[in-house]
Amino acid sequence: MPNVFDRRRFLVGSAAVGVAATGGLVLDSEAGAAQPGTAAVLVNNVGYEPHGVKRAVIAGRSAPGHFRVVDALTGKTAYKGKAHDAGEVRDWGSRRYWIADFSGLRDEGTYVVEVNDGTRSAPFLVEGRLLQRYTLSHVTHYFKGSRCSGQFDKFDHSLPVQGSTQHVDAHGGWYDATGDFGKHFTQLSNLSYFNTLSIPLTAWVLFASYRLLAAREDPDLTQIETWLLDEAIHGADYLARVHVAGGSFYGSVSQPGPPKDPIKRTLSPHQVNFREGGGVAIAALAAASTYDVSGDYASADYLAAAKTRSPTCRPTTCRLSTMARKTSSTTTTP
Image 1 (cartoon, rainbow, N blue to C red):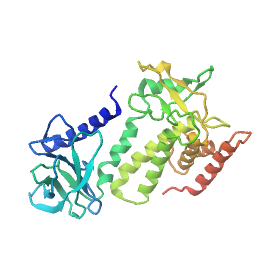
Image 2: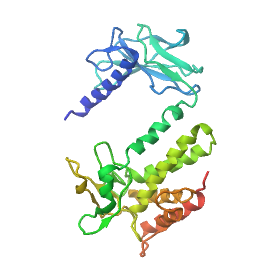
Image 3: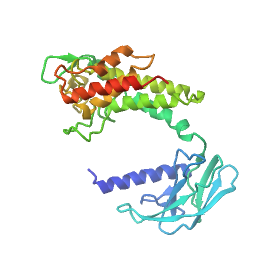
Image 4: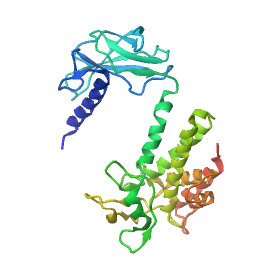
């Protein structure tokens, strides 16, 4: 297994190859080395907002001096500037890096950044609302593509609970990662604090994103809003299924392997606490209850799951129910 420094070189090399392939450069064996020039010019492959910060990174062995931004369609120079030294990066080879800041360029169009030796970047856009136009649908569909599906989802309709004869309907949700068909509230941490959150946070962020976009009343975003709300409700449905009546939520579906065999999937009996995703799950379910549309559950069911607390009302579960009441009373449909 490569060490961390080898992995850094691989990632830098991959980025350089991607830019060079688009820009028509030929790379040598060292990451970022371009032929016939002495530099590689790396730009944001999504593009830049007209009034936003615009910077390119120049990787080379000698100072590039000045740079210019060229209109890719007309060949005219649209901006000139001097590259500023940013130093070297440990374990990234003998390359040195410079920053080319062209934030002063405000006109929309397609451009390339060129340095003194003739090396150019890949073409890039300067365009208004560029990030939401070219990335929002991809991000939303990433989650749709990560849904638990096929034979795995079919088996999850009656998933055995580890160490018992009980079966729970835990279908839906999203896979944990590429190659990991498990489903988790957290990254399997043994701690009850400082946890990264997976499924519950995803559902909550999707609802929040929908709310913010819908508030703009922008007809260009209508389809994206539909996708966001659909995906958020998909997440809320999963949270409702793994909710334990009078308790919290089952936090993890395990998938041993290889090979990845659906019949080996099990549901952990562990119920998450407030900081293991329980609190965010409550917030997501409360948000789901405020909309006129719903998934496999009625809006009232989402709210009921959010408000449920155990009979003993331990401090953790009391906080859960309190958060649910606050969220449901303050969250409104845009």
